[in-house]
Image (tube, rainbow, N blue to C red; front, top):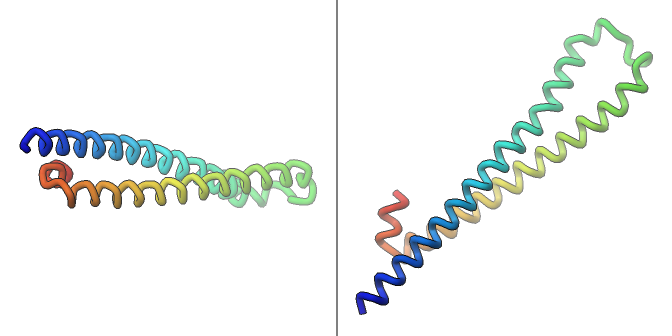
Length: 110
């Protein structure tokens, strides 16, 4: 009987390790999403700060593609952030389920 219990605990620990690795990957995605989202904000803040040195109508041929690019990057950043947060919450729930079934795993995750 103890062999089955030990095997079950080993499998639970391995599952927890896998989930923690996936969570680490999602955290990296979150970090990337924040960086991608911050880039358009930085570009727009520079444009606003230097707006007195140019006329928007004169540089419209440059401004429109830049606005499209920054908008696309902002959307990509929001997508990466929201996807990562949802996955992190999912992995946390799965880890909580494993730790509720296995006392030794719960001790490791504290």
